Length: 237
Ligand SMILES: C[S@@+](CC[C@H](N)C(=O)[O-])C[C@H]1O[C@@H](n2cnc3c(N)ncnc32)[C@H](O)[C@@H]1O
Image 1 (cartoon, protein in one colour):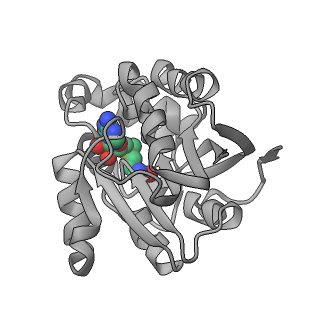
Image 2 (cartoon, rainbow, N blue to C red):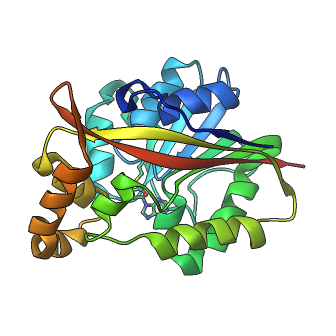
């Protein structure tokens, strides 16, 4: 089932990806692996929702931020990549890739999906949230790193290369929003995710600055950008 939950609400009132996950995925008392957990915001949200989350991350700056923001649970963040998860077989109720599958190198996407299948117990769910390559936010980021191809490759891997025992059981398309205080915050966020963007950012900074102010909707001291998202859920037989 695909629900198009586009809305006329102001951007700053739109449900977040965390809200959408809580709406569509049972979280409480579940062991959840967040693959490519970044700075750990989702891991902390999942714990607050009653889950036992484990974050897996390969970015040095990211995992440091995650552990520093969650010192009591620093051990819940493991160094690792999606294509070689440091997690036992059949041990997770849910595996989440939130905006991270398209960061797995394309030659490893099939392995990453196989790894998700390996660590999930029977009846467990793989949940993949991917930003769709369209809209003002995407157009603002595009000169720095055009992710059109890798995002399509992530969807194609899900369609064609996932393990045979993962059946797609739901999908939801909705619009969320993200916001930045200023261009400096945008720069930090994008470069923390992938340090190779630093050089590109320097060369297109003026162009991005124009797009940022053209597309960003100002509210509460921040600039807001809509982002269409596809959430796909696969259940392990
Ligand atoms: C756009 S960020 C998303 C962070 C977080 N999941 C979120 O939703 O905010 C993409 C993340 O994928 C991570 N990543 C890069 N290569 C990866 C790989 N091979 N396997 C898993 N994650 C990877 C990056 O380090 C980065 O933290």
